[in-house]
Image 1 (spheres, rainbow, N blue to C red):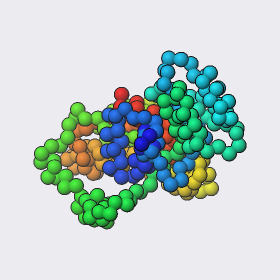
Image 2 (image 1 turned 45 degrees about the vertical axis):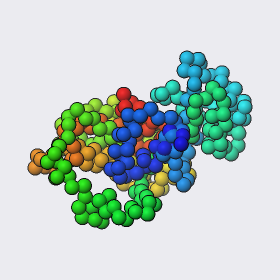
Image 3 (image 1 turned 60 degrees about the vertical axis):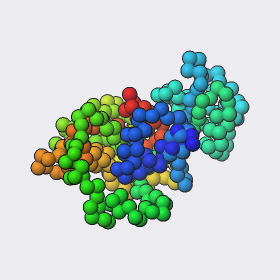
Length: 286
């Protein structure tokens, strides 16, 4: 299964399991196509760009990209360089363009190691179709099934380790007393200022400036993100569940009492772009 397609669904999920999956993925060396497979949905919302990774990392890419544009009949222009020897390429002209078909044609070229359409990743609650999922109440929402992961018994054995760093690749974080001692310096990877809601693009400040979508606002992609949505502060909630300071008679308890939290902001208004998310994941993984 190609990297760029295996990450999409996990990134879109609001579940803690998705956050843990992302942390696990940071230790791997993913391919672009595999990330897109995970991120695939019934109706992906494309950004109008394509992510291209070249086999030869030493040679300029202008000439081969121009040749590919002539071959495919569409305009291909480098928008920016990404991590992992990849480039974000904008698609122009050529009438109605099928991003998936274009990516497939680019992958046929021996100079291209991988290619995948850039797309929007959006938060949603995921219910798997596995037949035995109803028999797993410990995975359900606490509002639905009392109980949970039986963490008090687990804490008798271990309360975590300060040597562990958990990357929360999400909407960023808000400063809170229960998180202050756990947070380490993160980064804001939202490249387009109109969706970051903090007035700028990428910067070394992962503060969550919000991800609200006002009534009447039209997000890019089809289908667009639902309008009239308040700020979710989702990254702060995930970071708190994973590593809030615990046993301090304040607020909530975190799963790991000692871990450090690395906040990586990739999602703002209208969601997260796959290209920004991949850059954030690779940066977090070192």
